[in-house]
Amino acid sequence: MCGIVGYIGNRNAIPILIDGLKRLEYRGYDSAGLAFFNDDKITLTKSKGQIKELERKISDTWRSKVGIAHTRWATHGEPSEVNAHPHTDCSDKIFVCHNGIIENYKALKEVLIRRGHKFKSETDTEVLAHLIEENLRYKPELAIAKSLKLIKGTYGIVVFFSDYPDRIIAARNSSPLVIGMGDNENFIVSDASAILGRTKNVVYMNDGEMAVLTKDNAKLFSYRGGSASSVNILKRAEKLDFNVQDIQKSGYPHFMLKEIFEQPESLTNSLRGRLIKKEGNVKLGGLENIKERLKSIDRLIITGCGTAYLAGSIGKLMIEELSGIPCEVGLASELRYLPNVDYRQNLAMVAISQSGETADTLAALRRFKEKNILTLGIVNVVGSTVARETDAGVYNHVGPEIGVASTKAFTSQVIILAILAIFLGRERGFLSAGKAKKIIVEIEKLPMLIKRVFGKKNKIKLIAKKYKNYNNFLYIGRKYNFPTALEGALKLKEVSYIHAEGCGAGEMKHGPIAMIDENFPIIAIAPEDSVYDKMASNMEEIKARRGKIIAITTEGNKKIKHIADDWLYIPKTL
Ligand code: F6R
Image (cartoon, rainbow, N blue to C red; front, side, top):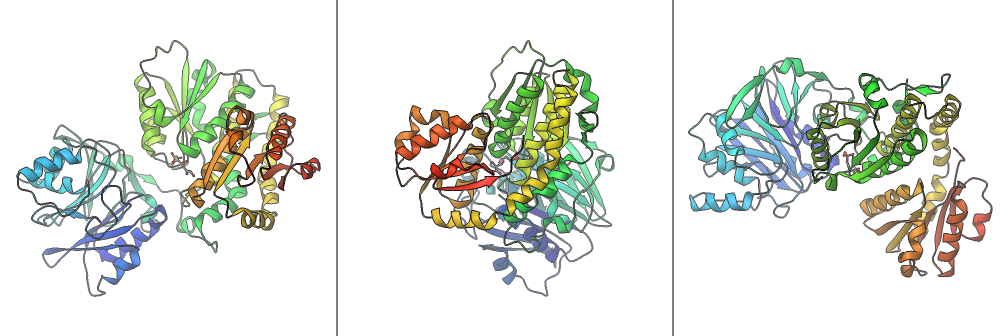
């Protein structure tokens, strides 16, 4: 995923830009570049590969007080120096960094080439630099606004003009941008981690907004059709709620492992102040204002993408069981195409997103908002777009998830959905205080139980080593552990590049069992719960086909030794 950093102020911009790019490295990238103003001209430096390659090209003697920088993750055109951002117009006077995708770039490029523009790269972004060049008879802000009118797609852009070195201009549509406001200096970044330790005062830009940053000022406009109306930026300023330590590896070899081991603490943070054990109830401050409306809803729809969607799938089961409210879960990438269904019922939707910026989740959310449906968010990043655009919501408070593959955010999403289920069940009189109390007691134990699972890390490593050369894996589970199986398969694909599928164990006999042989290990999520006997039958079927079984089951389950090849015990809980 791409990253953007811009700086204007009194300090040397170059180390600030490079340091900002390094903070965004965790998002993945294949090339990087920067442009800065010095001695009446802009210097542009790019390189393929890591940021240290870019650093090698930078002289210690270079000084600048303004510049923009970018890390690119190739979408249009291979990773290369020429395709790295910033991109320029024909006269090398306009410099553009862009996150997002310009969907109609091919048509625009053809028109621009016919008008004599010379393109250097294969990227969609370069179109923007040439479009702005076409409009340069206007002042820079208007030239950008007029160009963006022609764009279809998503963008967070920063633009820098050699003729106007006193400013950086940024605009946003569906790709996050954050303004950092310091003393006589301003920053523009795609992710607040890039400015941690430099300023805590931030403004999250909205779609359709343009920002003009000068050394001692930051202005925000809503631009529509080329005209602009100003926004009071000071009223929108927020305080960043995390620190530099939160984005360091603290001795772990990589962030994903660190975040897995953070879960006892991150779950404690998600639960802090929210459980009222004595009363068998929960307190969700973010839902106070809509408590009455929630009492009367007849139906809930949960949405999200990837892991967030799978957390939602577990949430659906908990909400139905504990609150009695019929609940559906839908992939945001599909729900965004919701037809004009006539919702007679009193409906609410819950959008789940760690980042709060996922384009499909936002599109689905907006589709429901258009229909005046009550929208709630379960979001980790404070002040993100989903958080701002929902009517109410609950924050995860798990700190930044830098590992990209969701781990601590997933468990937090599930636990927030569990307490949301209790909240709804209690508010509607469906769930007794006694039963809620029993669940709360078990929830409180979870951080400690997770620590117990960490005690098995050596056994987990041994199993991983034993099976690492297999090319295919199947994860199976039933009921609450059907989504868990899907999530397990998603994680294995994403971080190991090994083919993996998740399947409802009850579906095995309807087709998937045909794949099973001794080369196809199965991970069976089979705690001793209400569906354990059925899971045991599924494991027997697999064994009969000589499939290898790695079972995850409850501590004390001795029978597992007769079915599974390997097993991992997890503590018993509700
Ligand atoms: C998988 C993973 C993704 C995200 C998905 C949604 O490990 O991390 O599937 O869960 O891209 O992201 P958010 O939650 O930021 O909307």
